[in-house]
Picture 1 (tube, rainbow, N blue to C red):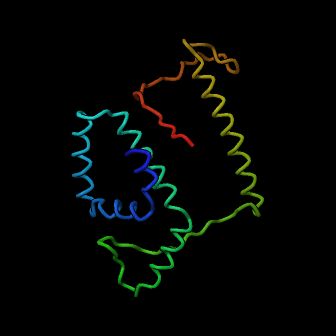
Picture 2 (spheres, rainbow, N blue to C red; picture 1 turned 90 degrees about the vertical axis):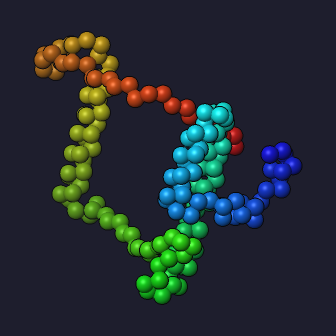
Length: 160
């Protein structure tokens, strides 16, 4: 898109584009498969940047306001009528619990944090080892952490 086209692209155009998206998981999988084949023909870095932009936009659009409004709208539907535009929905309530008032829980939480820090420290120690080394606390021979390469990735940062 040229700069002029980008400036003319607004909410109405976005809704029109979103309405063209596949309607089912099967259609999404089919389009993703076609996209995978396209990667060989196009610049994969460009495609990744486009998708990162789309991901960032979708994340912004899925705001709390939209979700709150969608809950209000969904609650207007009669019980048992749980579909809209081919998708089904379900309104659920979420809760969180606080246990901080319980002294035994606070003790367990403190211990868990202490052991969590100790575990992280041990992991850092094992990562630094190059060869088997005596443990500074016990004198026991300790093997270095086993490193498993997971592959490479590209991180995309969009301009502000």
